[in-house]
Image 1: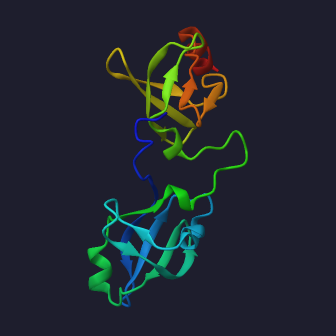
Image 2: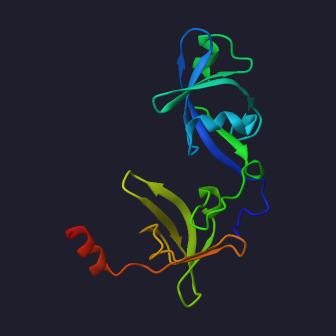
Length: 180
């Protein structure tokens, strides 16, 4: 099982940005597939769980959500929240039905094995710099390595058993792909 399986999991849903207007609204960069859906998860918390944020009204403006938070009534209060990450308990999110969809929080910490079942390390992060997803693996041998997060490179993921199988791409294949 993942190392953090016994801890209550929080999933990062978004980040509060700048204040919007003078009546306490904030901009939120939502990490949900449909940005406005961040308002449907109920109360959100900060990373410690100590502060709760309830979105009482939200609308979409370009790629940001403009939201009114319960108890935030003016720009000064809204400005103090800038940079606050918003989380929800993992249990509040349904597991994706599509076998090729995963919540990043479910992948972090999974053991990484080669095709022979030998342990290579653990998934440290899922990154995306615009082109496609990349899996960062903290290697048992030391350091970390980045791999394309594709079915060819990561052909098996078993959340329940706590592992992912990794088939590192051949360097010549990567070079050929870069050349095309």
